[in-house]
Every structure is written in structure tokens, then in C-alpha cells.
Image (cartoon, rainbow, N blue to C red; front, side):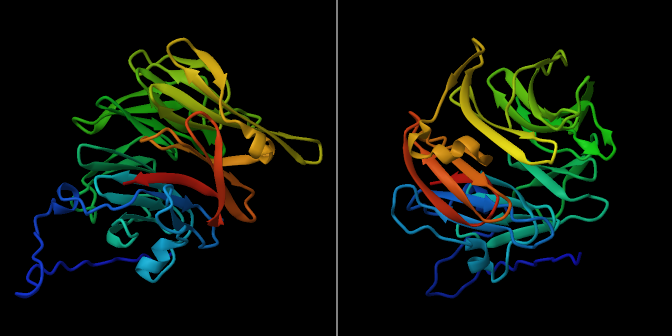
Length: 360
């Protein structure tokens, strides 16, 4: 695939009648833009090898209409092939596009500020995490790469981990990595990186493998993995001891208010490979281990049999955002308040909405 390199020129002297802008390399993150309204950026993954990923913006307080394909409008080109992950950090939006092999830093209109194109040696970018002015990216080059948010045009280092790492998360000063699979081998290790030295602290061997998603809730870490029958189960992972314990089933997880919120789209196939999907939503009090139902689906009964691709919580008010996908038609986002009451639903501009980033 042809790599795209974007050169950004910064013009600091604009003339006597214009406003002067600092050219300090940290100004992007230390001097945020004026934010007038709250927005929810929604990443539509698209279909693999179809070059149809897209980025939308939803206005939860109704100040504006839903804006479709804001990346294309701001940059004069599509987002690319397979939008993988989305992260709001500082006053920028970061997006990894795995099929098109790049990481982009966007302004709050969706315009590219900087971009890094991954090499074949790097491997395609997957998931993102951020801390202390750095963005960390897992790649299917069996590594995690580190970028300074002041300038992402070149990595600051990389660490070799397990096979094709997927989601990553930060707990204290550790970055925890879900190693997955390189067919036909399922990686049974969870990698722990020390962020002070940016080196491997340990690779924890388990009896499980093909890890996918991760959520850090207080002192608890939850990780999902594929079973040999390709159902998705959940583990509780103790970082210090390396002990993992089965902990139920979930296909999507998010941490909020010291609790673990889960969506579980359990898919069962018959002898002719016809799928039956049963979806439920629950919250776990990690201190007691008790699960409780969430979301009143009276106004959205179709979610009971939908594949949930996106499951996010607004950190400001606890609203739930649930994205349903069928891999064929544009996705639908359902919004519920923090009590689980249905608010609204709307269609996205593309297939398979998978992540949301909240900006205000």
C-alpha cells in the first residue's frame, strides 16, 4: 500500500494585522483551542479492504446537527481502510487506521495536524493509550510504539511484546498488553511494560490465549479472550502476582465510576452456521463482585439480538452510547442516560461504529 506522508508548515509571522500564534513545540497540547460545545466523535471502522472508514461528530446537547464524515470534509480525502481506534487526549484527537497503516493527530474539526505512516517492520497500528504527554500504539509487528504528542512524526521508541497485540491499557506506571494470535498460534501471554524505562517488566504466561480487550477499574484489571470455540470470555488479571481468574463473559467493557460496565453479545451457531445473537448489559461492582442489569431496552428491544460493536460511557455525565453493527449497513448508535433510560438513536455515516471520543 502506498504510504502517505504529510508535511505541515507552521507560519509564525502572519503580518501586522493578524493574530500571532506561538510556535513552541508544546503549544498544541498546552494551549487548548476554544471549545464552545460538547461533541462526541464517532469512528466508523468500515469494512476491511474497502477503504471506507469514516469519522462523525454527534452533538449531545443539540447545539448543532449531526455531522457525517468530518474527516473527509476537513482533509479533502477519506479516512482510509479500517478505522481501528480513537482517543481524545489534551486538545487533540488521535486515530489509528490499521488497513491504511497510519496514526493521525487531528484538531477538533477533524483536520490532520500531524501523521505517522507505519512501515512494514512497524506492523499495522491497532490500539491506543496515553499518559504524561505520550501516545502508545500496539502494532501487528509484535510491538508497542511510543510517540511524543508534541510531534508524532517519528516514534520515540518501541518494545517487543507478544503476537499481534490488541488492546492496551495503563495501570499506574504499567502498560498492560493483550497479545492475541498469529494463525495458527494463540499467544498465551499478557505483557506488562514499565513506562519509566519503557521496557518489558514481565510476560505473564497463562492457560488462556488470544487476548482482545482490557479495562482497568481501580485495582482490578479485566481482560477478554477467545476460547477455542470462539466465544469471548473474561478474566480478572492481578498485575503484581500474574494470576488470572475466569470472571464471566463480556464482548465489550468500559470502566466508569470505579465499576465495570459490560455488553455481552453472545453468538451461537447452528450446524449450518446460522447465527443467533443474545445480548445483555450489566454493571459489576468490582469490590463485591456483584453484577446488576443496566439499560432499559423497552424502547430499543432490537438491541437484545444486536451485535454490539461500540460501548462507551460519557465520563462527564454517565450517559451510555451503544453502537450496533451488522457489517453490511450503516451503524446505529443508541444513547441512554446514566440510569439506563433510553434517550435517542441515530444512524452513523458508515459501517461498524467501534469507538467514541468525548470532547468539550
